[in-house]
Length: 420
Image 1 (tube, helix red, strand yellow):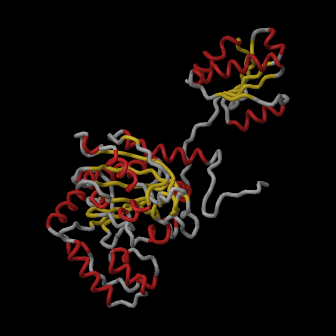
Image 2 (spheres, rainbow, N blue to C red):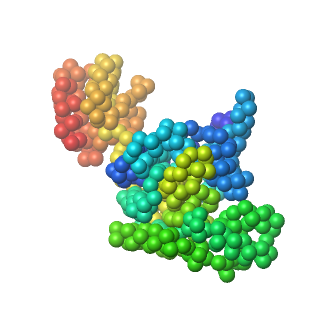
């Protein structure tokens, strides 16, 4: 037993389970790569101020959940709690928006960190795949991202998820709603912290998960009743484009994402098989975020999908991913000469793209064949001194059990033919 264990609220990805997580990341990324999104990778930590300005000082993420620290040089940094602010900061720093091809379409995959009470589906270290389209205000872009997320989930075999959709208005109409909501909240029986949050960003109170708060919000004014004509028209076009693409969604007038930067389109992917942690992903439009962090006006939209929760959703639906074996061919040498010959052949197989492994540690035939079985290899190559004296090896089909002798110099060509 090791002296050390993974920190509370974290987990290790270990084979063979880790292959499932890689497959989920690949499935989410595939539609993005086919739609003009380029890969971006940002540091695991950023300036605290980037998240305070972008995510919002009144949010739980910034006030309670962020891992913040001061470096030896006096810099105040934080482990990234989400991806959008980091990606936008990187795009602005590299002047990607000045290249003349807007929107700048980016996708990313990485780890994020929040100090939360750990439970199934909610971890202090978690993985997301995200996408951002920066620098264009177009309902088709909002619709594109929702459709691509839906496509990714369906490619994995998921079917029992729902898309919730709402509009949060813009700088023209939201202030009117904000004032009306604040008036309503001031009349409720709320604790001081919640009332303080209501003065800073009242929409955050709508996102409060406590039953004592939610039961008082039944008659809260709805933002959709305050949308200006431009926001209504914008939202209706997003709805029409998604519907035309055959993607089902539910209008949710109470949907509020937990980050301050969202405007207009907001959406969430939920899976009812996950209990309280039902959100598997979400996103929306954030037209003012660039200006919040010191950049020019760059209307943008994006989403992030949780890899961890997507895996849990697959398990809840009983979906088994078709993950190919990590090894196609396993070589079992019997004797020193066979070790030299078969090791060279394994190297050749790998060079032509065939996944091959080798029995290391000078095991006997019985132990080596157990390793071959555990590897999941379709074929095993076995060779001893007598085989090599005849210029052959024994090729065993691990599915049928059939075994045949083939020439040493024919190994690569034969396996390329059999494995296609």
